[in-house]
Image (cartoon, rainbow over all chains, first blue to last red; front, side, top):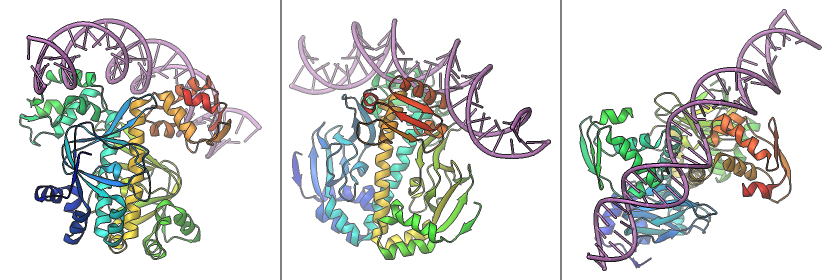
Length: 227
Length: 227
DNA sequence: CGCAACGTTGAAAACGTTCAATACAAGTGG
DNA sequence: CCACTTGTATTGAACGTTTTCAACGTTGCG
């Protein structure tokens, strides 16, 4: 961790709009703000490693945090990617457990950290915090289920198509957008080798998708849905 | 649902030893018991379907509950399998959300159901319940992460080997045990077609594993670990 | 300009799925 | 007790997909 500091006005506002704190009553927000510590992470900095005793809860203010598992022989598999406003789910470990995976900044990031023991203390007296944690975890479990089934049911081009569709406007009109992070990160999130992502993009070119750098243009969302 | 009833002595005891209720103080246990409804499910009965408004929390007393997602074209992918004592994670949905997947009894089962709205009411006054829900969800998220990374890092025989190792005694001695459910269920849980599971078992036969029906014998755990 | 990180492309191999056929087991009714 | 039926498990062969390894482009930054 590079710099540690109390949250300033900017950070307080970001935190307030973040998923977790936005569900809380004013008093619980104040209690959480009280114990928040803001940290500035350079790219590739670890937040925690799989198996370590969990002592901190993390919330992303800016940047992206990659959570992954390691093989005995060093290969990595991403299990989740958290962006601004997200609570890093793997760090919500109550009662002296251990982190179930490793978390690393995928790019320079700003995060808020909360001492887990103190979070527990607050939650034990303020049910809205405990409920907010449960709600957050519940939706993250839903996302994990979606990843799992997506992996098992769809091919690489299909997963990429679904990702693109979920990141552009809802209507059937053509649209463009910018990938929020590097392609290698996206590949990891989708459970693909970078090569497979590349090939998926080439294949989708035949279905009205054009990609240059991080810029994506979707010519025909309907066609994409049929891939 | 076949029969609905208030929990009797047998069910109360099972519930008490179950994961969720075992974390609660006596008063919260009483409050939960008060609203518990026991149901007897025939095999293949649905508990809920993906997308339905979530109104019940489910806890398995006996049998197994399979949670899966459906493709537009009818294919299924299992995302979790719950046994006695487990809270069905996909049904912990706070604040008027919808079930993220479908749940079905994999065999004749006994479950406890709790009205979600009343659970929320209790949790809003009793933090221990809210915390217990968060703890349950946190460990389920960890399991989901493990499945996801296992899928992505290991081949079918390796996943089966890991499953077998996790279900027999910890020491390095040979041991036997009975699969707790059908092989087709196990295949789904591991993200495999039944054929792939069958082939994985044949391959493991060359590494000291013998399978007859649901009976498994592990001749050399160490060899299995090296697969 | 040159280096380093990132991304793309190709070819070969490993892996898993699918479909179809067959074997096996358990439970039902004669 | 046996034949029949149904659900479950195994095996084979063909196919499709993804990984892997290696080489080649590209981009961005010092």
